[in-house]
Image: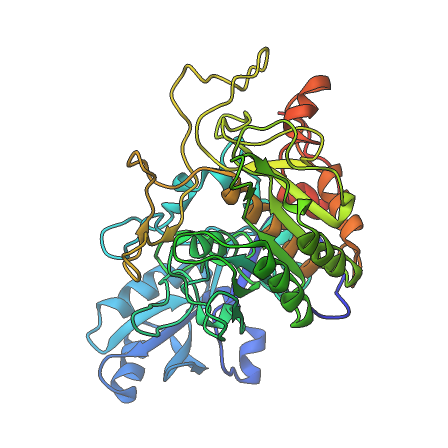
Length: 467
């Protein structure tokens, strides 16, 4: 993570973009850039220049990929000039030099595991957890994060302690089409004890994709901190099971190898009593969390899926951030643990809990949607799809889905530098808790902690006003 950050500046409502001009002569400086066109040849440079002249324009420079920079008569003539150029067989393409777009991200991801038949932008409807009334308001957070000078999450390494990640083609394993190899750093497999933490289950790939799924690839979903890098640390086997020792060792390894924040979408269960346990009930994990905090690395953990009011505990305070699960309706998920140990909630999908007097909770009505991502289901390693739950519904529900939402927002905060170069886990947690969206006063804090995670508010430092 960089040691210094640029200050954040508010962006204008419209952003004018120069589309890759390689060179333009001094004479072009006196012209209207809005009347310039980039043309590329379908039949040689001489034929292309003739086509430009025939369209009533003139060549004023070069553009990338053997293109020419062309000046139309004025802005009012540009549409007609482009139309004339496109009709000429010598022209492969003609497009304006400058285009305008609103200063927020509208990636072209499809929301399905396909590039062929799906419509660009389908992720907006599929990812209610980012864009919906009870999502985390991610799109307005992205331009705020980019104001620091990079893609949202850039410069931050997120360790994902899980079943591994589908990060590489290593037969029989394959890299997920929605995870860029440029956004994965070296990890470790604490199950097989080797440097190849390939996913054998699918859960870890789902979690990692929530954080870094590649935008603008006309496929799948958009990661919340898509500029960050994931460090895969495999601590659970192909059945999704593991032990406390490897988890603790994985935390320490991640800290020692440069992780800036750690996601642990794991819950502990006593095999004798079948009772759910807090992540920090184990002394090895407890010591590892303290080790991470001492190195300014926040551990973000799933609260657990037993609808238990006493798990997780408050034992380690701000050293660990516990995230409960919320639904598309803004209610606590029926599965989510709750109580004093839960710091906040984030989208986990699924059905609403029975909470008397909470207008957000309608368990008798239609179930809310799950959280959707591209992954695979064991044993079909490498067969990527929008994962479905046991009932056949798209996506999965649970606090495993909630935790990486919070982890990704931590990455946005760290990347932006709004909390300084090296904020403590306590400072990060305080910012997230102070900017959550209220889901209900008084007794409802028992269920929601301080409220619903709000990415844009966390970047701004001010709560989003009630609707």
